[in-house]
Length: 89
Image (cartoon, rainbow, N blue to C red; front, side):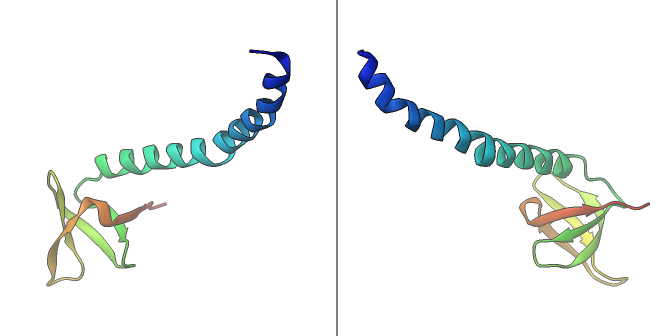
């Protein structure tokens, strides 16, 4: 490969490296942290669903969580719809 061809591709390579560090890498870290949070959910944890409901985990199952929305209502929720865990201070 000649030096001129390398000089032509250098800006494109540089742009890809910047794109990687500013967009792709942080998104992968966020996905990994969310996956670890889902795996660590246990009975008694408080969560926020993707629909905005605040609930308490009653029983974690393989693919679903049984959650308590109020004193009378227990429903099953797909793990993919857990937005975040509420950390108690």
